[in-house]
Image (cartoon, rainbow, N blue to C red; front, side):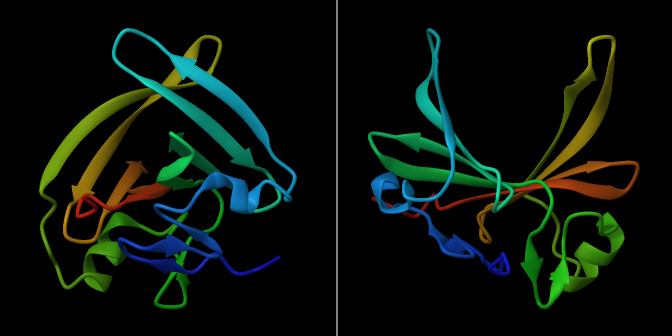
Amino acid sequence: MEKLELIPNVSVGMFVLGDNINKYLNLPHTVEHIEDEYLSYDDYEFPEQYVFMWVEDQKIEFITCYTYCFWQNENLIGMTYDRFSLLIGGQQPDKEDICYIPVSKDRGQNQKVYTFDNLGIEIWVWRNKIKTVQIYNDSEE
């Protein structure tokens, strides 16, 4: 498997923000269309690469890593938030939030979500360990 190296605001591994999703459909994947009164997008999962992608109008808007996401030769997934803070020079997040994430039928986790707009990264943390990394690029268009 290719190492999922993060380039902030740009890509994770071979997956590039803004690319047409058709470029990657030769890889094993599943897709689910999500639609409600506020959102309409396709949620692609590439299980062999351990990533999800939020796709609108065939364009990759968000890439979500839940097992591997390497940056500066370290896997962010499982890293302590304190260590991540050191990697980014103590930069403070632009936004902090808490989201409830169901993990089974009757249990869940209140995960802290830290957003760093200049890096185009959201870090989802539970018990001081990074569980999920989501990348985006707000500077497009």
